[in-house]
Picture 1 (spheres, helix red, strand yellow):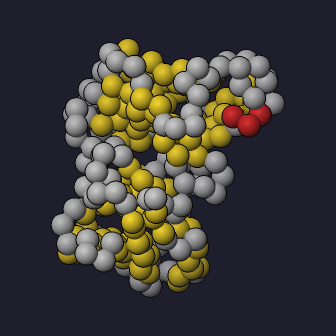
Picture 2 (cartoon, chains in turn purple, green):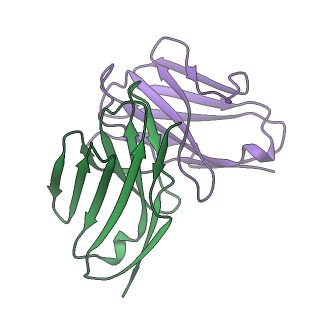
Length: 117
Length: 109
């Protein structure tokens, strides 16, 4: 199946700093990428949907100025958590869909565990 | 509102069979997914149902009844490595994935 990578897998940062997470589709072109956040023992929460070359669509309650998403190419999307605070500590997961409008299957990255001190 | 219900936790014995149920109420329906998620890892795709009936894939089967808003994931010949959370997710009319909270499956020897 299609492979999606994320980097870094774990990051610890100080409060107030910014953290960038990369999501790459390794063997296919991802027209659409999704960013999720998962708190312990809770389900995945969709944060935003990004299409290559256009602005991301954020879910209600997600601050777009705090969680900057860039989908610059068909194989790379980045999520930048700006001015991170301890409450932003979470497991961030990206997924990618291969074709525009093809939502039948999303391929997930391995996730990034963010800890903000 | 949109709602997906599945049991929080289930326990089963190695070698046995377990059925994990999922009921949903969503605005529209474009398919139902089951994902497996091991602790600290991202979900992995198990199955996709959009028509009523049973889809069998090795030790795992998934069933859907659209009229009842109901699905189940059936796991046979349970192995210790099947200990994980199983997430039910529905694709709504806007092609948004609505996620259940997941069922933690504990396998005992």
